[in-house]
Image 1 (tube, rainbow, N blue to C red):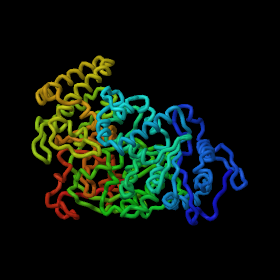
Image 2: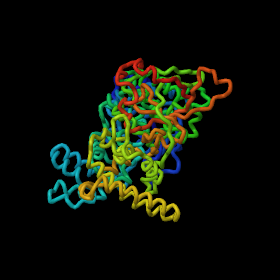
Image 3: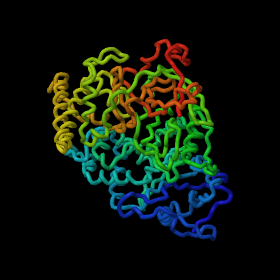
Image 4: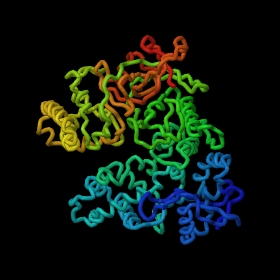
Length: 609
């Protein structure tokens, strides 16, 4: 039985708790997963029949059994908001930030307990104790793994030696709760968060500290099949201003989270942004608008608002990954509008794009045509793509990547980008990781050890790929010939002693972080990596306002458009890394200001559609 409060709880002086949970099953697999996530469990609300989901019914039963919660007023969206009224949903979503920030406690319900809950919560409690009282042991622990035999005789360290307990922790973190976009706002804005999993309780700070431990140590890699580092960002209790820096940065950080209604990939973050961002967004939730394609309309409105609020920063354009990643349910989007419903870990990890400055710090404000949904911009057309290689995912799956080696073979021994001569092997290993390593990502300085690690990684990776190549006898012969020639180059560049002194994982880790990318070469012999949608014939542009080069695909002109001001039409393919051109080398050194006056003779106008 439940009641709807009148007036609204957050408008009264009464203390209340707010529930944070997922509508559907708490796990994707196992006994707690359910065949239906729909509201099919009946309860009485204000004397009337209301249907709720099984997971919500479970937490209501649990709350009645917990002395600290049974007599509390509780705000629950499925009960307090009429989910069938789109206008009410829009109005209530605008109030969510206030509701969760005003609540005395936010209760995070992970779902019913299973065989992993008790050992996981016990281990998390021990990890918290070590963090609070023995930081030197935590540092020691961070260098071990679940399979290590080096825990020693220390009683506190021995408590972490059971691999199955770590697997249980991984299972807890894999619950669907941690993939849900709404939890970001609900947890970050909360005064206090109490975590419930069945009958077990934890403070949220325990979850947050454990998440930080996994994100900054090698443990996530050791349990890679169970941990997802990308989603850990959602439940690290970071500074509110970090999450709410701008609407775009918040969208980027939350891209891999899920929502039942894909429009919530944007709307679920607006309260956080409106509350704490320095640059407030004028976007508001609008579920009630009768758009023919509601998702496309919502994402396009958000993109226009971001560009209008951006002050000449075109980071938004780097979030686009091409038509391959556009979801069919979204509808037709302009090429420059990201499809936020896509959960693929695409791109060059754009939250870290501050490390690049391809346009030398120049900015521009695009002209937005709201009727045609096109953008009018100016930029430098740098070069045309003439060769494309396999996706990085092919190498990660252990498949051969002959086109990569053919591209590198086609380059001159010394590469001349914007920074003078570099050996092509150094350019290659830097390019396929975007010249980025570490966590959080940062630019790689001169690093002999990382180059040697690449050489060792290459040998191990091509050895695995040989098994795939054997399935194609003719292809296998050509692949082995390519690998042998390439290995000779590596051996001349890095001797056996250098390779023996490093681990292949030093390079494998940054290589694995941005998988949905494709190597390419340009007509002038420049090497880059960009969207998997890249094709020969695409153009690399340096566009003021964009910190990375952009890949554009020319659109044919209709006869009546030859003399039209919208000539030079393109579709945006996505952002790219082009070695030697990531720090403004393509524009005049004198143009590192807020205008484009210094490169007026280099730029040309173009339209994105």
